[in-house]
Length: 324
Ligand SMILES: Cc1cc2nc3c(=O)[nH]c(=O)nc-3n(C[C@H](O)[C@H](O)[C@H](O)COP(=O)(O)OP(=O)(O)OC[C@H]3O[C@@H](n4cnc5c(N)ncnc54)[C@H](O)[C@@H]3O)c2cc1C
Image (tube, rainbow, N blue to C red; front, side, top):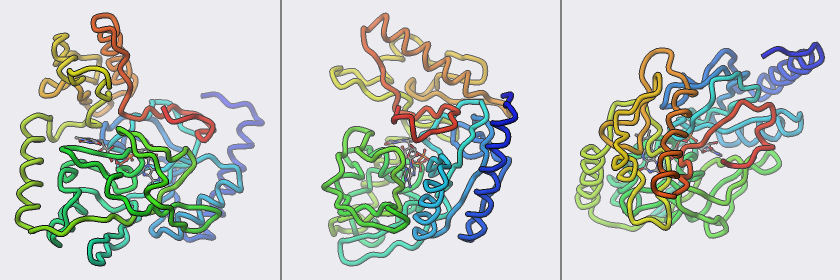
């Protein structure tokens, strides 16, 4: 992208402000990263800055400073539900996968930081004899990403067991009741610009062996029906609420399994998974293939498919965009 002198000066000013904030708060700030390195689809363009806080307090302080300085930012967990486009993204990515903290178990209450791995947490609590999230054991990503999306699988959703969520407000860590959040199908009422720092879950005591067998069963069902080891973002589209047929089956019935657009392919294993291939895979290909699927489903089934994956367009002010 070509910049005017004025835009260039503004970017330079932002770079300096950011360096100063990161140095003052002692948070790692890096340039030269690409979404292709940070997302499971392995596509997407360059990012101005990636900032990686390690504690909840640091993360709360940093977003406060960024907001005060008028610097746009977006939170990223493991990037397993994000498709970022190929352009240069002129905002800060707050990478939370280093903000792991420690899991604290107090009876049936489990407190965990947003950067902690969800699959790891499922194993930890199963070992501690706590049930309620074993169906989520095969979902890649962080606890923060799972809370944001209300991740769910095999009859479990994270929102159902969330007692409180810790969020960043005015530079501080603040607890809000889980009951004040709307937990919908792969969507919540959290707003763009809200940073989730951690959560306390209320689980139920059960036999660790029984929990583990339920978790193993969910994992083997997943292995039997979904591509593994492939570069994907899980299900690309939501299941339409009014249809009894799942989206994967619908796409499969259109004969689209294996369909390719450049570096993107409809998975031959599960038609609602788009996978990418090759060193220089392009978001553009995945998007074109996704739109081709939507067009066919619209024409032949009369159904408007809604994205489950989040589309991140390069935009200088991401806070001004709604959730897509
Ligand atoms: C193979 C595969 C299988 C999958 N199966 C499932 C499944 O069965 N069920 C399911 O629900 N999902 C599934 N997913 C999708 C994905 O794993 C989940 O949505 C997961 O919870 C995303 O976590 P993440 O840390 O990767 O989030 P990211 O992809 O990094 O982010 C997702 C969204 O959450 C926001 N976010 C992340 N962390 C924070 C934070 N701390 N504060 C504020 N916002 C934040 C991001 O801004 C973004 O909008 C699958 C993905 C893959 C690759």
